[in-house]
Image 1 (cartoon, rainbow, N blue to C red):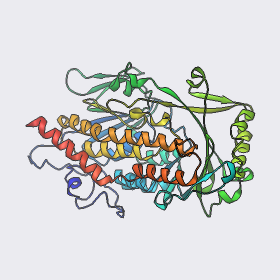
Image 2: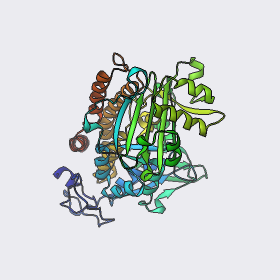
Image 3: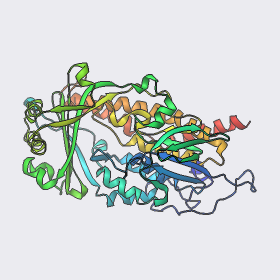
Image 4: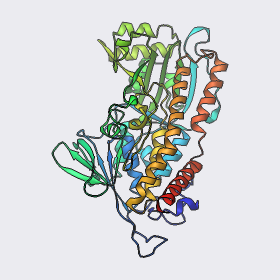
Length: 471
């Protein structure tokens, strides 16, 4: 695609189509910088980029930016190590295509992290239809890969030069540099460093979001959704002792979602079949004061009562499995609802993933991995096309114009899917036919993205904004 080949400093061979799914080429590291097409004597300026947050979104973005020789990247993590809190993630075929487009060498990271190809199933958990499988179109149920988040993060970080990853590096403030353009980061040890671009991958309660949106913005105050989830991972042998071994067969790996009456259970293999990820969730109708907490506590007996109507044997086995791990108290994560963020970018800073839209704490049982990967692809593509610091503002504005509406659509649709998977879809409930139809429609809105057209649109917007600035 010519639109992508014209990026002046992409470290790939000039005839390589980086969006060809069948390509196995790995980008070369640090080629010499070519001169600009408009002026052969003018050199491309180095763009200094700071990524705040060492989770998957920040690490994937860093890998994408490393493909461009004129971008100097630093990744900052406030904790002693980069880590992911949630146990697993599911990569749809679209997510895998996007990951390849960001950096083809990350394909190998999935294999080394123990990603398991799975077939997704949705089944009814309660009532006279308990155990019945929904007939959902194969394009939404085949080709997914389930992988441990921490394992994948470790593999992705292994491809980033250690000098670019800074641990125990807590950013205490972001301010406009003076004199000169750019932003200055201040750290807890008293040091400071200047950057042309600061990217926040530090979550919805992070410093970067406060800088861009403002601490008093209405979108900073979440409301309780009434939804809680409990994700865990356990050794496969332990899980098979309590959950039917048939549904945890490594020879036929499946991710099964059990739809209850206001509840949801999900299980699937990961780590090359050595571990099982299990998620349980429910809609909690409590008082406003009680449900405003980020954590919901249960006794094992209270937890069992919540899922008492889910009589399928695997569901009852999941309850016993959770009770065997949490014998005194069970702490579930309460999801919050955020208003749509008014902007993802300022002149020199932007937000991705949870920092942009609160996806990690959103009111949804279904959190697709697409959004963060889409944002990393668009952002790395646009910044890769910047030939000077003067183009940064246009790149970030184009990123906001393209990614924010898409993310809002995905978040709304994900919330709808979450209601469907908990048996609470309006006018749908636990009716298998209606539920399958509604899920197909919702999945299609998320997975039906034409990623090539999406990138081209972002590039065209950036070019238009840059042209308007300099003419």
